[in-house]
Image (tube, rainbow, N blue to C red; front, side):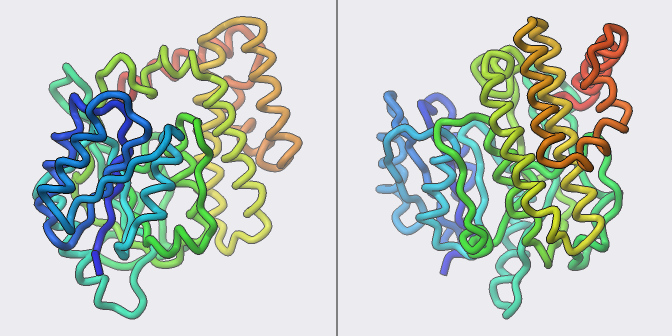
Amino acid sequence: MKILSIAIPSYNSQDYMRNCIECLLPGGEDVEILIVDDGSVDDTGAIADEYEKNYPGIVRAIHQENGGHGEAVNAGLRNATGLFYKVVDSDDWVAPDAYQTILRFLKEEAGKEDPLDALFSNYVYEKQGVRHKKVIEYRSTLPRDRYFSWEDIGRFGASQNILMHSVIYRTQLLKDCGFQLPKHTFYVDNIFVYWPLPYLKKMYYLDVDFYRYYLGRDDQSINEKVMMSRIDQQIRVNKIIIDIYTSHKPTFYCKKLDEYMLHYLSTMMLVSSVLLLRINTPEADREKDRLWAYLRKKSPEAYRRIKRSVLGNLAGSHNKVKRMMALGGYKIAQKWIGFN
């Protein structure tokens, strides 16, 4: 049995996907690399087939009609045979030493009757042109060198949300919880990391800088101008996050689980609101009001708790000064953290 299945969603990725694949090959027979060609019209599919031919038993090429990033992740999961499942985007890569540390740990887990549900590690913003890269780590939040549950975690900082880059899930857990990402939708990595959270009982944190998250292409979905042009996609995902939170709220077994899921939802609400403020049109203002109204309808309690926060109060307001303060806070965070 494979220890780790790694899906590489790939759409017209011929110019950079080799770097991603090559960094994962040192995993050897312990991993399967699932290159999901999502209806590409360049040489992505041919490159995937080339690696499958050269590395039989390690690399598998999966070809499908274009369904978007989410459907590529779904396809990877459907084909995964490894005990654990990881997504690495085709323009990103992993650090060699940290990769081997991760694999050694997961190999030990594979021999246990009760393997963990999720493994967390650090990730690095590899922003083009920036000399000092921002590392997102969880040393002040997650216990180290031991298994833990939600009861054991600390308070997450503003930049410490668990993202797709920082998590490896147990494959069967994803399948058992009915995990499914929507097709033809951007920003579904938020759903990927959020959906399984209520099901996690046994977790572990390795304090290694594993995932390298590349930022710099003008056409990247995380580019601010691209995000503004696709605000409908951001709002759709935001509403799905609201739906997930409200559907699980009655069954949360731990207050800290509730607090973290609300923390993540709050971040989503703030990002969506600030992008709509940046668009700065009457329709964008109405869309922002509709999003906050959706949250209030789904969960009046979550609405009140998020609005009570300083940034929530600013981002959800029509007051000109508060709007300017919200935008200023976003710009500071953008510069400090290094995202988009």
